[in-house]
Structure formats: structure tokens, C-alpha cells
Length: 467
Image 1 (cartoon, rainbow, N blue to C red):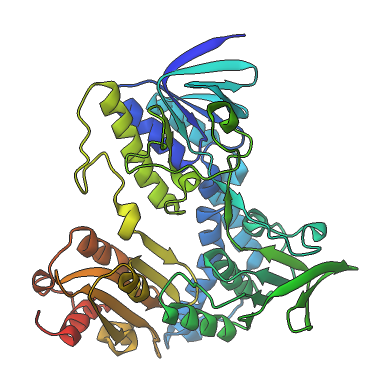
Image 2 (cartoon, helix red, strand yellow):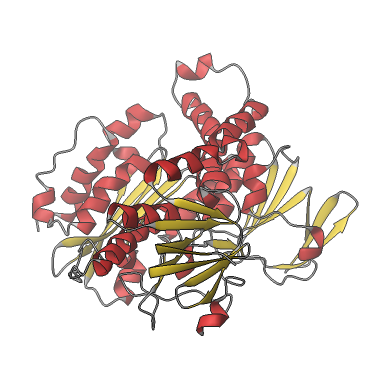
């Protein structure tokens, strides 16, 4: 049995694992990625990129129809096969040749197959034993969680992978869940003309500001979707070519397909955790250097550590982990200072996220409720985005809302949420303000260009008043 030694072994070749390996190599170490599917991972082939490609065409069409002059030029309907073909291009038709070429150019080795930890600093894959001089990085991601609703598994439900890789759009789709995947796929399929029914146990986007879920529910209904809130799915069965869902009140919903979007579970059930004293199928708890608690050689980045299940946040963690592994290997002191290059402190209170629904939701930091629960003395400032001059130019009858949550003691921002058409690009300014802890009296000097929707910053500050 052949044994190959590297400085760093990365289990999982998605975007997060690639970043961890790349930073380790840039730090002077050798690294190998072990991947059982496609190099590039979930984001490239079944999540971020294909889902946004599915959403974009209908979004552009709706945007044109909101502006007189452009609206009159739109004479046709959405070409769904063309949308799917564009999605296929974004996924490289589910081939990873380009990603493998990049690994080679970056000096990162690749071993294909299902890797399992078989001892400290040891991974076995396809009969080959790999040993790590310094670290193993677990970057295996997560899978869709299928809840134990009676009959659900028997009807072969869709998960997010099925929804983003579909070859033929169903005539009707029931979606169980109310989070980001549920609302984004509801938006995409409603745009295709599919009869969509969303069934959520509480409201939509429950981890965000309440008005975000309310405006998204309104937007989905305007697209023709049925949105059932505070509704439980009791059982599921297939009758002929339809899936029938029995709801908590005894009523039923029928659809050609059912998508389960109720959360994620760590992909750690069969990677050998039991050989090093950890529980298979568990989330891996880490410190801010991404070192797994109780180990000096095991790191976990991305979804698998349950810190922030977002690709960009996982890549941020991976950069920190790769840097800290290289630093420790080379005997360089690791900075544990806030916002140091070797720590992932932004996972705590500065996580930016865009939900590509209709309307979009762009958020960063703590909600008003979370800030209060954390013990901050806060003030909440809301403003109607439709009253911004740039918004009225952007689209007729622009509807949206902005909120900033202020730490009254330090006079800095704790959280910002924008909801409205095309608000995604407003988010980075909010992210910089929160991460940089920019005092409000300095934000007054960050003058927004007129007439753009960025003028919302001036309106929020004026509503707050001089600090």
C-alpha cells in the first residue's frame, strides 16, 4: 500500500477546500485535495452559480417591464430552455476540467476518491494512505436535511441539487421550507411559469428582519406563487403522477414535484471521525483559527463547522486556515487579535448575505432582535427605499425598505438590511462600515452619489440625527 506525504491534506475539493489548499501552498507548504465528486464542489455545480443563473433571466425581464420604454420593447415571454442552457454553461456541463487545470497551475495535488481519516494526520483514499506533516483540513460541506415527515422519503423528493440541475421544468412544484433555498427556488420556478406552492412552518426568512420575509412573501404572491405560512406538512404520498401533501389543517396540496428546503446536515458521516474520537455525522466545532477543539492538527472550514453556511464565508475561513497552518508550520506567531489575518472573527457578527428573491434581501450583522438579545443598547432606524430619488429612476413603483441597527454606546452600526429590487450591490458599503466599526460621525462624510439608491445612507443618517 503506497504512502504519500504532504504538509496539508484537504478533504473536499469545493471552493472552500481549494482556498485552504491555495493559501497553504502560497505559504510555502505542499497540499493535496481529496475529492470524490467534482472539483469545484457544491457552489460551482449545484448551488450558488447554477441557482443564480436560473434566477437572473427572469429578474432582467421583470426589471425591463418596470421601466416605461423598455417595457414596450419586451414582446415575448421567458425562454426557459435558453435559461437552462445558460445554466449548463455556468456549471461547465458538470465537468471539472477547468477546475483541475487550475489546481495544477496553483501547485495543488489532487487525489480522486472518497477519503477517510484513518488516524492522526492520516487519510486513506482508494487504497492509498496519505499522511500530513502538519494538518488535515475537513472541507466536506453539507447535504440537504430531509425531515422525518411520514412518506416524504418514499416520494423521492427534490433537494437543492435537483432543483438547480433540472433538465425539464415541472408544471407545478411544492416547496417545504421558508429559508433562503426555499424562497430563491420559489422565485426561480415562479419565473419559469411553474405553479409554485411554498409551505413554511413559520414565516419566511425567519433569521432575518421580519419585514424581509413579509416583503418576499408579498413578492412571491405577485409572481403567482401560493405562500402558506405557519403551516405544517403532516404527511406526503404519491398518487399517480402527483405528490400529495397533507397539511396540518387537514387540507392538501398537490404538485408534480416536491422540493425539501428545511436546512442542512454536515457531510461527516463517513469520513472516519470515529477513528480519532469524534462522532460521525457531527458538526465540527472550531476556534477562530478554524482548529477543531481538542486537536492541534485538525481544521474544519466551510459548512462543516456550522459557523456560517455561506460559500463566501467558508472561503474567508479557508483563507484564514491556510494562512494559520502555514504560519504554525513555519514557526511564525499567530495573531489572535481582533480582525487579525489568522482568525475568522467575522463569522460572529459580520456575515453578509444576499438572498436573490423578488425583491432581493441584502443583510449584514445583527438584526434588531439579535442585537437586543446580545445585550446591546440599540436604536433602530427604518426608511422607505421607494422614497429615494435613485430608486424612482431605477424602476416605477419601486418598493423596498432599509434598516440600520445602531449600537448607542459606541455609535457604530451593528446590522443593516436592505430589501428591494437590485439591492445586492448596496451591501458591501454596509459590510465595510460594520467590519471597520466606522463611527456614525464619519459615515456622514461618505457622500453618496446622486441620484443612486446609495443615497439611502444619507437618509438613514438624517433620520437618526447627528450623533
